[in-house]
Amino acid sequence: MKLVVKFGGTSLATVKDIKNVVKTVDKISKNNKIVVVCSAIDTVTDELIQISSLIGKGNKKDANRVLAKISQKHKQFATHLITNSKILKSLSNKLYSDLSELDELVHGLILLGEVTPRSYDYLISFGERLSIDLVSFTLQEMKNKSVPLSGKEAGIVTDSNFGDSRPLMDTTRIRLSKTINDYFAKKTIPVIAGFAGADQHENTTTFGRGGSDYTATIIASCIDADEIWLMSDVEGMMTADPKLIKNAKLIKEVSYSEAIEMARFGAKQIHPRTFEPLLSKKIPMRIRSSFNVNNPGTLVTSLHSKSKNSVKCVSAIRKVGLLDLTGGILFAGPGAAAKIFSVLTKNNINAMMVSSNPSESSITIVVKKEDLHKAENALEINLLGTTLKKIDTIPNVAIIAVIGSGMRGKVGIASRVFLAAQKSNSNVMMIAQGSSELNLAFVVKDNDCKSVVESLHNEFKLNTIN
Ligand code: ASP
Ligand code: MG
Image 1 (spheres, helix red, strand yellow):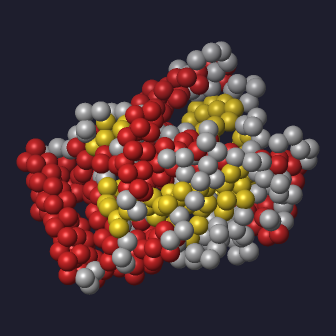
Image 2: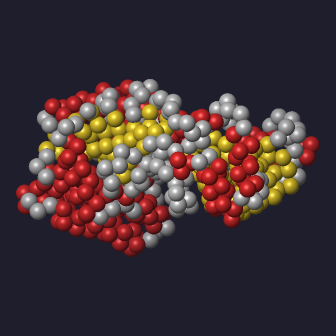
Image 3: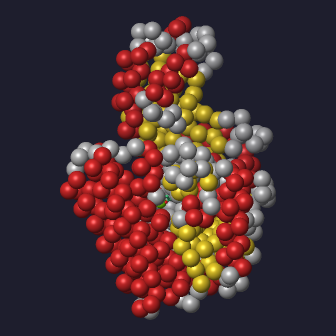
């Protein structure tokens, strides 16, 4: 099989974890052509972001301190991972070259005292550039031929939308497939840095947080892989958050569209565009744990699953707040919603869920809890007294999402959902369901969250799924 296997940062957090990952790759590579994609070692991307904000504040000393910490960590990992002196020498040289480049960049930015979107992407791409060195050379230590490649070196070409770039698929396909096929011909395992590519002017660009998943699917599509595996510290997609529900179960199979809903609703955090490159080629994906390789995890395919369960998963998004906007007759007529959303957009506030009723007298919007006051203030300054009559906020609420493609066109699901909410004695404050019927979401007080999820998990017998 031609396989793309991606490892998340939590699977690369310690020397032991990296050895474990490399052992897995070594084993799989015996019978498959494999491309490895890596995230940054756990916390390193956050530290690079911290360096950027310290530079912005003019705090040179702490920026240098965090930089030294990153550099030390990778050097230390190298000496613990490799015993063969020749390989250690080559790894040290490669790390030295990458770390010197990072060092020069940080000092340049300190001198300038600012980080532009372009230099920010360049800076935060280093987490992956360093982790691939460790993984690739440890593979060599286990007698494999392997090469570490940045996204740019591998041939990932993107637009110039720094921080949220998209691949230029045609160019990327030509370059990437050539690079990888050449390495396959030489029986060499390419270990590719996730998260970043380069635009046509060779500036480094990133795909946004969590973007290594996206790198992996872009590669899978370009080389026509047979499967792609996303390996991290979770076993796969679960019927509910196991921290909330003790008998939550692993879901064996979901469709792309279900997985997209689940990813968005946080059952397992996956970059939102991850599935895009797979859809047309229908490449199957497995979501699995790097710590328990005997578990095949969740299979995501283009097929509608044959599962008897109409509902597959109940997830909860906590730490959100609700804005209830009343407009009286001012609302009726075109443009009110546009005004509200443009105020939110200008203030960089994401509306996570929206509901309004046909009387057009109010709109309810859910935002992240930390955005709630900002949203309230911005709407007050801009629209209160004109478009809006009253703004109410409720801080501690949770979105409950019931997900499953089997709900589509089926009579009686909503009544079971709300009966389950009633059984847990919870008040439903807001409801939204798109007409795709893949996802029925509602809002309750955060205190009620656990009992509602439990009640729904029981009602739909999710502990007997698969
Ligand atoms: N290291 C990047 C991040 O934390 C990309 C990734 O892990 O997927 O967001
Ligand atoms: Mg990550």
